[in-house]
Picture 1 (spheres, rainbow, N blue to C red):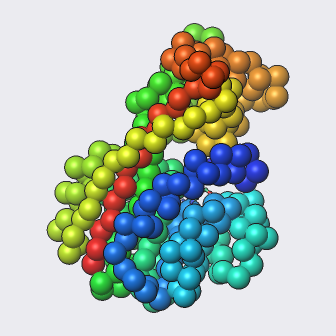
Picture 2: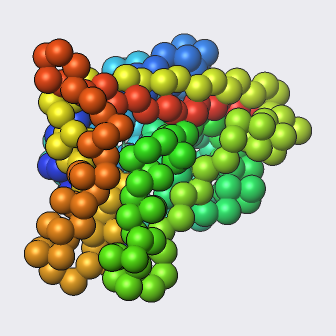
Length: 256
Ligand SMILES: C[S@@+](CC[C@H](N)C(=O)[O-])C[C@H]1O[C@@H](n2cnc3c(N)ncnc32)[C@H](O)[C@@H]1O
């Protein structure tokens, strides 16, 4: 698994954190006692959960030591666990199992989602947000560039696969196990300083496996320049020079 850079990730902290605010706001529980944030990263989504339920006992879990170090430093008041969210088991059930922008990194959703729902206490909720934009130009162009004549020799195996499915998949999987499943999609339109902003955004997330498969900074620089050139026709600057970067996200809340 590639290493995460919490500073680079938090460059777009507002844009990356808004979906967790929207997800937490939709969970219809007034006073959950125990809440866990799976794939908590540097603790930005855990802080959202803390604002929603200030009295809850909070735990954040992540498998990146670098992300957890940032979380522990900024939020020493909560519990932080290093582990794999796919195999994590709650000692005692949690009232809310929350996960923002993490489960798309994890395979085998048909096993993992029922497993996570089983860690939720009766009356509680599993609440998840994942990107749903893997066919949008920034992702499609990443794959096309990696598979192009100039670059495919650098990637003998595809550096990563995305692991999320359409809403129907999660409904059909979880409805038989849950009292209720809510699903929705939101298109966020991020306003960025220019195409470089989109390259920077993905350098902190989706491009990392591609960049880390390359041997040195010079080659990584060439890959980023080619990626930027491929993106440019799709993101025409507005009159103020900024570009609009649409980003679709899928939300689900399964209540036990
Ligand atoms: C895009 S960040 C999301 C951080 C934060 N939840 C947020 O809302 O901004 C994804 C996080 O998921 C973590 N992650 C990915 N796969 C994981 C796994 N199998 N187990 C635990 N954490 C994982 C990564 O280390 C990273 O910190």
